[in-house]
Amino acid sequence: MFEAAHAFFTFPDRVFAYECRGCAACCKGHGIGLDATGGEVAHLTAAYPAVIAFLRRRGDATTAFNPRDRCWFLDDDQLCRVEREHGRARKPASCRLFPFNRIYRLGDWAVVDYNSVLCPLVVGGAAPVAHADVLAEIATVDDPAVVGTRLSNSDDEGRELVERERAIASACFAAAARSDLAAGWAAQTAAPLASVDPAFRALLDRPWHAPDPATLAHCLWLTPSLRFNELYGPRHYAPRDRLVALLPAMWLAWIGFAALGAELAARPLGMQELTTVWSEQAPLMLLAARWDQVPRLVGGALDTAPDVRRLAAAVRENSGQTLGALAAPILSEAAPAARAPIVKLAEPLLRAAFA
Image (cartoon, rainbow, N blue to C red; front, side):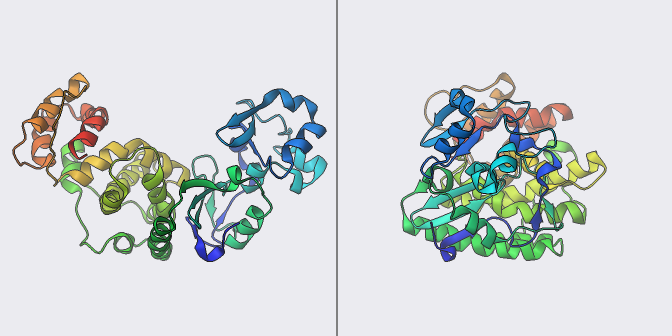
């Protein structure tokens, strides 16, 4: 267990709510994380012997496979049969914690994150989730593979992350209540509010614009989680110390794509949709954030898609021009519908050019 003072919650206290029977998406094909240290495997296999055939190891964790259609234990009322027959304390640990089951350790510091892809969290609702309740649930789990995925052994790294991101989260949550774009930017950087409009015009022949207030509020509620996942997720667009400075401009580009998504859907976007927008549009966000920076490509040949080779050649031959100066004329000669796909194919080039 970790001290509450050493924990960073990427979600606000007593704001998010959800309904377990709302969709059951978490109970379909994602496996069941078990508290092996706390005797959960022994109990589950004694109560349901057939589950023995479906146990597996994932790293240090013991999990049970379940089908994509629905979990073995999901009944026709979209409720957990284990909980109904044996009580909530016997429900598998990862299921009890879901969607707040993404828990990471950096030394003695901890990050408690949530799954905004699978769970349709809402702002408000009948029973908003409290940090204290999540901590109490975490305290019932003994297995560190469930509640202690280790990202680093460094206390200094943990302290730096938690103290910086906790302050950003607090300011973003306050800004969300007002749908305040400028305050969301100021929460992340002391630099003046930048512009990603040139990149949007080159990519889309359209100016950047902010979304409707409801979509912007959802973006702000979601920002601390997406920042953390970009810093410690699989993409590694830059070393973390440099990525911290890059994230605000990527965030601003995401806000623009959120506006376009809301326009396309003809309604405000929710947190699930906005999470997907961040993931899908990340290469375009990276382009926008690097627009005024100078790319350099050194070393051996870089394998690129045919549509990207002209841009790759321009970057390799670059003598001091910004990425925007190189990319804008190339994009302008492509059909509008081809521009975003070209940039997504160019993701390896963008990584290499700013390595």
